[in-house]
Amino acid sequence: MAADSFSYKDKKVITIGIVSELTGLSERQIRYYEERKLIFPERTPGGSRRYSFLDVEQLVEIANKIEDGVQTYEIRQEMIKEKKRHKDEAHKKMIQGQLNARFGVRKY
Image (cartoon, rainbow, N blue to C red; front, side, top):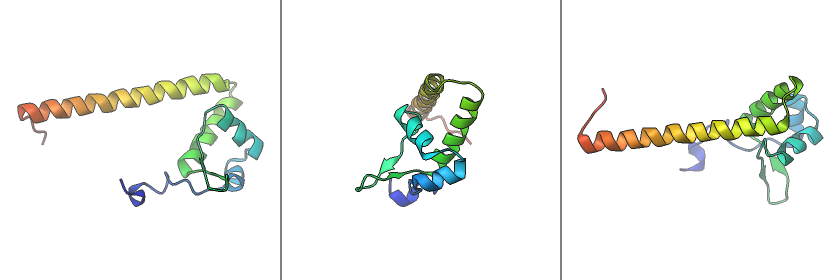
């Protein structure tokens, strides 16, 4: 998939300083969430972190959960479950598509 086919929300182009301004989180908090494997910025060749708009949205959700008393471990476990659920759904769709193709089923 070409890089330009990704949504602008997926592109990791935002610096940690801007993310801090957008979210109200300190740079230390953002780095902590990365350490806890809740957020996954890309790194430039120079080592600077780059975030996407989706990362910004995720950080706001994380901050809201933390404010509500949810522990980072619980947030991480929830993220793992959600990722697995999406993977399982994609797998089911792929299998259904293969079955439909094999048996000539078409959806209109």
